Length: 146
Image (tube, rainbow, N blue to C red; front, side, top):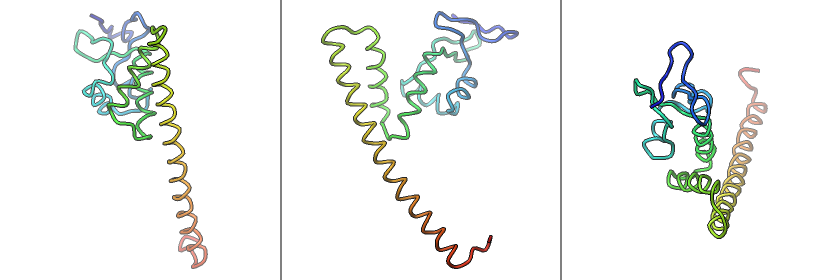
């Protein structure tokens, strides 16, 4: 089992330096609570635990968290996130028909993400138009701050 040296931090792991959950949260831009939620949902599992039971994450673990973080604003469900992570994991070793099927699934995720990005841009344009309308009203009626 991995151990943590208090003087130098987490030890090296086969896939690189191990970081505790606080550093993982800071580096990826997620809260510790969110990372624990994703762990409970089976999206991310720490690669190791310290002797004291602290979660330890590798760079690939942080990469997985980053994928999940980017999927969240696009409205992907936890099941969809899990499915994409499984596709990405399997692509590393898949060959032949299995690889082609995985690439098709990855393509479907790309299409869904692109569609959702377009919808968000449309919503943002509406929201910006509303904010501009309010600014125009303030300018027209005299802004109390102006």
